[in-house]
Length: 411
Image (cartoon, rainbow, N blue to C red; front, side, top):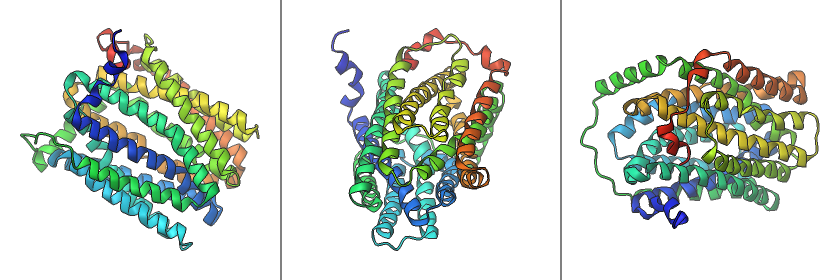
């Protein structure tokens, strides 16, 4: 138990990981601030949940469509430099968006185009960052490094929405977007200082596609994996309703939405701490059940509950979602061969992203057709049915805790 803080922060003693950690923390904070700013910039401009859904959906489509290409590029070039390029692209997109909002010249088409550019950059960030972490830290600190990255993101998502809400109320969404833009340029400067050993091999184009096929075989041969990814992917369609209809309902009260978002982040931090010790004997079963509380804020908002009740429900949902993610990645690490994890995870990520734009795009029209309250309740019901439906899959129950990898779950 000696020097527990030093032991837990040991990965930060390594220069390259410290630089990566700093860069990702800066951009995560910028994005957390800008997320709420972009939402209210669109709502203030068009007063339409459908338009907000279109903006978010286009960005998600751009990200999903470039994930596999991002993996190819990240296998050929130094991953920190791939992240530098992505940061510059995203910084340019947010700079232009901030200028349009601050000058009052923003149009829906302009914001859609710029957020598509932003999303394209994100398609390179995901595979590059996943591969870069192990290159910046020694093997015995890898789990610790991943834990620090995740915990910091959750803390930032408490502070970011609160700061974003303050900037919106006191000034303009454009100010928060400008801060996000600046964070990407600072991130690029930090990332280019990382010094990693060049990889001895870079696969050819043919070899890469061969490896993708091998990854697909690994993915599709595991019923528990592809079946749950499919169902979670469908469920994410309805998860997206919250991100569109929540702020649309509270568009005249941005501080309330910022509070709800910040409290969700606090719940995620608590959930991360819970996940350090929570080791169910059937982790995939627990993984399927624990995100169901995400439906609580949808129901609370639909029923017109006071903001403190919606925020409390959001806290509980944050706890559940954080535990869900910790269990999912633990199961993934236990059951998928290490040599195939990157390729298989690309299909996992694609399955998670590919249907999200449908949810964001349809949330507004569904709300117009049946009413916002009914749309929120419909989404909540669909999530419950889909998650409980996964319990009917025998292979979900067949996954058992691996005692030898308990330290991964506790990282």
